[in-house]
Image (tube, rainbow, N blue to C red; front, side, top):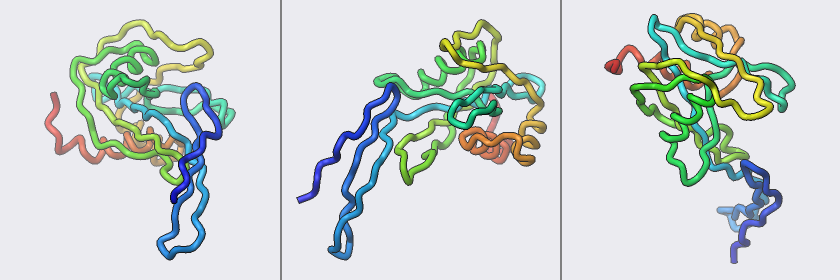
Length: 178
């Protein structure tokens, strides 16, 4: 009989569960600790003039500022598209007239079930941010070619931002613009 997962920790945005993974060869199973996360969104805010709005965001986990795309955690039962609209406004102050969802991806499936939903936001209008207390975020508007170059030079180290920028750079020539 398979063991039920065991709750090890509950935080404000995720839980840590312990699972027993059975062996296909009939041997002893493996114990795995998995971070259970509601999922998140990452947004490519595209501005007129072939520019993109990145953010400079201080990350406590690595003790430094990272250059990223705006992103945020889904607050169930909120759908990912609604999270994207909310997070774009909160983090950058922008609202978008046109949205398109691109293929999503898992951040680190060896230990984490977080699925990132990737959105392109176009037809942006500037407004006021609504950043959470303690967030140290600054908008960084750069030409699209510079964002790609920053990724290639290793100046962007955030995985979700690398995935979003490089995927969109590949797809954008074949997808009709809105």
